[in-house]
Length: 169
Image 1: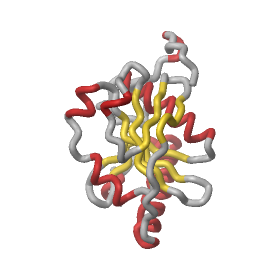
Image 2: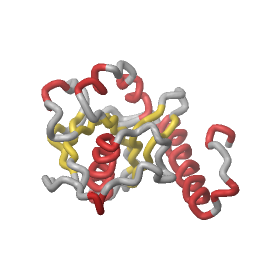
Image 3: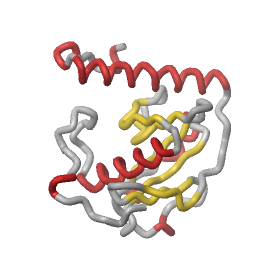
């Protein structure tokens, strides 16, 4: 993991079309480093994915063998303490991770999930997540949601005037 801090020229744009404006700059740093790690592991990822349960995963990643990982971004101790919904994500993924910054104590994160440390430039898995394979119908449903959302977001970038909320599709 790169331990450099972002400079003003490398700041994450808070008005990025792929964010919804609720993320802090710290959370976006965690997201960026984690997304780079996942891409390096040959996973494609999407941020802010609404699942069939109505919960919204911070990052949903799909691997080359259709493995599905959910990463919950926690930028502070308070952020983790305020979240009691994270166990619900297990029904939508093969592995569940938390991702955070190096200044957040690793020991506060539940042991039943993996842990990723991100510095905004890169990230590393410091604790592997236990695997719990999804049933085939669930995998198919989550994978289709992933593909449709990715295609919609690409289209939104190419033609912003045609934007339709994903929930209406």
